[in-house]
Length: 506
Image 1 (tube, rainbow, N blue to C red):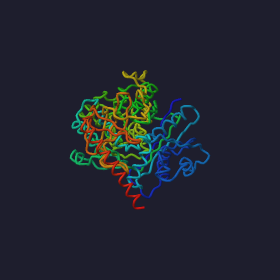
Image 2: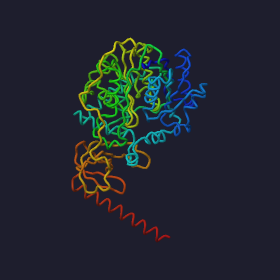
Image 3: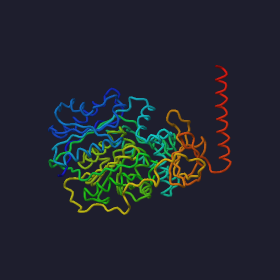
Image 4: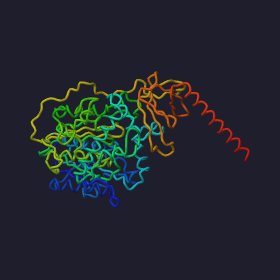
């Protein structure tokens, strides 16, 4: 059964200090129902990543239905980390396509700004695989390592990469300033970008999406409307980043894109514009490559040529993206969908209206690209294409040859696959924190820490040691290994001396 889009709505993203999450969801839902002509819905699907920890409230779908005066209507909550808004759309789509429901309200959002930033960062990090999180990894640290791996595979220098990332940040802030629903209403300059502090090399503050409150909603229906949801796909990758074969692209997005293109009988050349999950600026390039919209490992060249601008070949994130519109984690995917529908219906300001916006694509990432959702929306009058996309490269999920972590890894050499220097590490870790994804000759890949102040390049040979339940890597030079052993003996001796003094005093 065909699935059409009825009403859509959104609340302005940003800080809403006096408003609860439920109130944000209700406001978005009411705007959507009003936009739809006030017709009744027969199912409600709610998306939120972690309202229990962010807001101290569970059973959120029942609260939404109760406050909307829809008691008796079935409701459920969907959660796939930061792609929850995209997954809400997916569930609502299948509810209608199956014939089980006629009109389904999808609503998603998150409230985050009322909490201290360190606490928000801690909650967000809970989606990371436990070992990697306990080793000191945060979302930005993993994103930084993926960014560096992309630069290495694309044969682009870090200096040129930073220039590309700057262009993305400046572009998205420019269009966010034209979007009344965006959190950031001001443009930024290249100078401001390069003067912003480095968060996790090579990512700066302006490479990272902000903490945001917000909600969006959409009604999907079997009734004929002027916009259709023609394709949707979902893929899930390994929870641990170190267990993936490729660090420079997101396999789950590629799997999802293949499904969406096949369902819609479309290919990348049909897409007129896209909303790509840019929680970090480099994800815009990687995501667009995963969708087939930009040439693989050459997407950065398209950014340099201005192809992703409003007047370019394939406009991307003309809403301002997560980077400028804001990123209320559980709601971002549905906000992307609302933006696409507004573009197709010509409901946005002329200064950011995409020309010939007949087919738009949504790309939503959950966690560190664990649960990825892709959706294709079309003007209902757009002629069908007749065939789906047959990608030239394999789109199945691959895992590392030996994904199990070794029980013992002492005195082995490895190679740096990616590394970063995290300026603001999680609580309990030294600053700056040097982290690396290191491959061993035995086929393992581990997440390891390095001595503070050390600098490494992708492809560099290193020496690995295991300290209790964590890995440490250092320069492969014998002198570095000797210095490490001397330092460890000092630490052990100091610990013994402290123990003896403690016993003597008692």
